[in-house]
Image 1 (tube, rainbow, N blue to C red):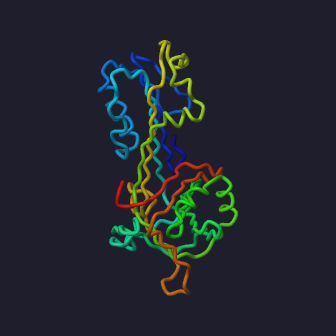
Image 2: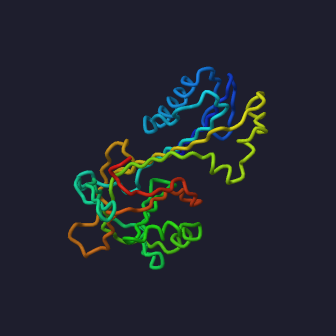
Image 3: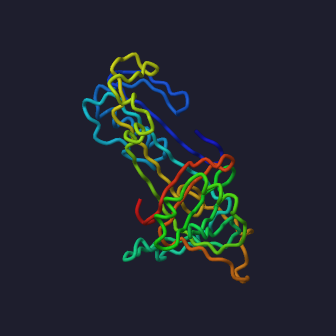
Length: 287
């Protein structure tokens, strides 16, 4: 699904024992596929996901079992440009990032002085900074004080997000934030069943809306998300120059926010504040 000029791509595909026509009204594709050979079925799904994400998600499905009856696969890939992109020449290629008390890595640290919505949450002892994408999306970066990460994570809720949204104020910030790519793959089976979706995994599952085959059940559900953060917002966009909004280098001191230790990241749809991504950056040098 594309909403110009940012892209939030999702896909769901089903795998049945026989050649089956599947239709999902809210997803990207439907197809007729013969899954007589499990390796070919696995490869076809992986090729489709890799193509749709332009190589960002590779090998999503691994080790399908011969007795697999049905697989639901979901992926998410977000791509957008910053409203205020960073200058490439201001990125420092060897900047210290504290992974833990004893581990420091060298990262590429982006830097600029801009006006951002930001706040210091005294109660949770963290700093929150909002970076807008072009049009209807934004990123919230949350930097807990050293040793306070678990407390902030535990406090994340719709109530906390509403409070931050109310308290964010715009002002000049001397910002340092690393370039990074993060990805995660989850087995959704346990989570979906805890949410009440138990029948789909049971022997009496009813998927007559998808296929006429009897005995079809969901045996495995996985989800993978990939996010790239760079000077333009993502790694795979062309350089863009926009220096007119920069604060002069010789100016009164501004608050400095350095994301040089573990921080949290949320991508939100701006009008509804719906969460598209939620993640934690521990080591920017690792995917």
